[in-house]
Amino acid sequence: MAYKDLFFDLDHTLWDFELNSKETMQELYSTHHIAALGITDFDAFFNIYTAHNHRLWDRYAKGFIKQEELRWKRIYLSLLDFKIANEQLSKDMSLEFLQILPTKKKLFPHTIEILNYLKEKDYKMHLITNGFESVQVQKIKNANIAHYFTEVVTSETSNSLKPNKEIFEFALKTANATLSESIMIGDNETADIQGGINIGMDTVFVNHLNVAPTLPATYTITHLKELEELL
Image (tube, rainbow, N blue to C red):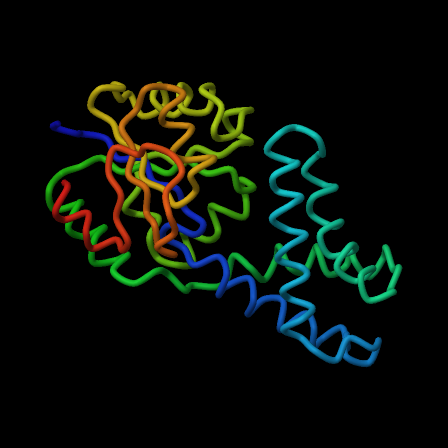
């Protein structure tokens, strides 16, 4: 298959969300003196936050909660698990989290290498992300990868979320791309692979964690450099 347009996911595919968010939360843990409130194990706190974040993102993607609720409740519920019911602290930390997080720059191994390789081969590259518009734009700018992408399609600009067909239809139209010559590349089977299946687009499952696949992606890789063998 001769592809012309490559649609990438951002978080967990190119931009290392786990490392960057952990760094950000470590800063907030320190500046807000969370240990003094009785939460003396940062790793335990971060693990609980991660679990709440994943669960609330799933609810957000399914339309059960709004963006603002997701933003502060993931921290509020994490604190609550340690018997700290402080809504204002949660909202303050949420605001600062979204200010600091996009300044982080950690990418997965081979990200720059593979983007340069694909650019040299004249592929048009785009992003399709469920992340917040302003946050995602800052992430790619600060990580110095914005210049690789022709279009950045977010759930806010498209008024839809992966895996819904509408966000992919919007992305294809925005990029002036054809379905048969496009491919979706991402780490999330529910959002990226199922999304591609929903619209009939070929997919690459970026299986960084080397888990057993649950959906039939067109291709599966375990690190980004393997894209050189496919494209």
